[in-house]
Image 1 (cartoon, rainbow, N blue to C red):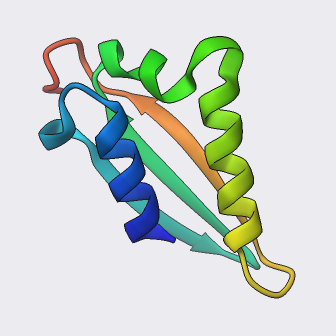
Image 2 (image 1 turned 180 degrees about the horizontal axis):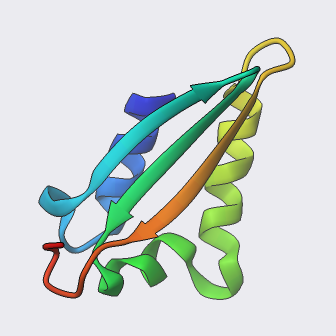
Length: 82
């Protein structure tokens, strides 16, 4: 799942080298945090949220045997540095 997200998200944004994707596992739940520039957030969300909804649906479908997977977007500074 993480490789899939990494590939798809990098294709959508203008500054893929600044993207950081981390995975956090909990009790039957995997949360992915993606940190991107503020200017790239809209590209991941898409018009009316359609892109992020599609990515989250694919992520949920890929989760295995009662597990849940979710994606959260974390805004990095405008320059990409924090």
